[in-house]
Structure formats: structure tokens, C-alpha cells
Amino acid sequence: MGMERTVDMQWGPALELGHAGIDADHRSLLETLNRLRQAVRQDQGREEIQAVLLFLRDYTVSHFATEEGLMLQHGYPGTSAHLTAHADLVMQLSDLVADYRAGKAQLTEALLTFLEAWLVEHIQGLDREFGWYLRGRGLAS
Image 1 (cartoon, rainbow, N blue to C red):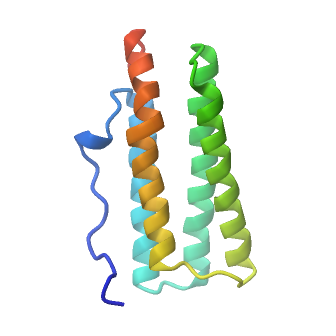
Image 2: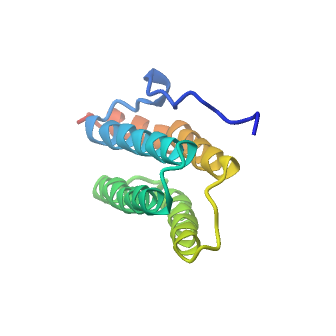
């Protein structure tokens, strides 16, 4: 397994958008991914891993709903592309949860790395643009 990452993802300025609510959610998502990696690394058993996976999916869904509500409320022009990205990840997470529950999928290092990379790229890409839009309208909290 030599490639296994032993260091958890760290929250830092590179991931901050300057919107308190969104930043708090992103920080929680990052911490949940760290919990998931820890559960897998320590082989905490299917029940625990499934519980963290379900929490991650549900938290992601509610966080995306919050972001999307803000976009619609403030007439964000990039809304449809952002919604598509959200819907794609929610579908992948839902499939993963279903497959894991059915015993058809394992949580591999590659899968965890994919989820972490998705979160970081999404925050630093589409979310950052939305953060600029909100800040440009004085809506930073």
C-alpha cells in the first residue's frame, strides 16, 4: 500500500472564500473526509465507515442546497454550471453509498483521493468564483 497518505487534509487560507457560512461548511466537509480516511485506515468496520459515508453524502447535499439558494437569491450568472457540478457529485456519492451498502464497493485509497481532490478543486474553482461574486456585492457573511 506504500502510496497511502498518512497526513490528514489541512484547512488553510487557500481554501477560504471569505464567506463565513460557506467556509464553515467546507471546513466540516474536509474534516468529514479526514474522518472517513481515518475510519478506512484504522479498519473501523463497515458500519462505522458506512455511517461516515452517509453523513458525508447528507452533509454535501445540504451544503450544496445552501450554496444554490444563495446563488438563486443573488442572481449569480454561473448558477447552472455550478448546479451541474453539484448534481454530478451527489449522484456519484449516492451511487457509492448504495454500492458500499450492498457490498459491491470498497472504499479505496484512490476513491478517497478522488473525493478530496474534487472538494479542493471545486472550492478553488467554481466556489471561488462564486465567493468573488458575493464579496463584490458586500455579502461576505
